[in-house]
Image (cartoon, rainbow, N blue to C red):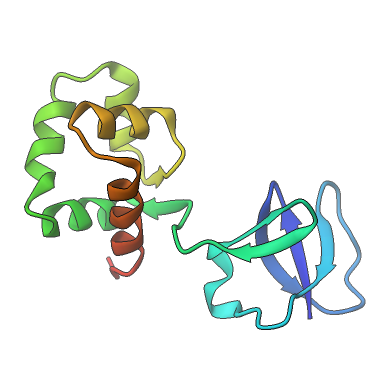
Length: 129
């Protein structure tokens, strides 16, 4: 099996006869590659690794994960009501990116650590919303 890489992410699997398009990279899948978890793989320095923290979750998944974690949803929404416009816009978007500067600023403003945000993203990714 081949993997199609774009922007440091595994975006799809391919057959051996796949033709490379544009900025994509095509490599052999490593032993043990799990296509079910494709969105959790990253590509850097010539290798593919499984990162359990998803890069992106839906807004619904994120809000449910916040609600399920001691109702952090109320804390976040109270902060967002008075937050800078970029944080408000990022919060209202359809998807939340783990490495978004606005998300990081929001988390920091309410005292969440990077490990806590990672745990929330993992929890969110497991929610079907």
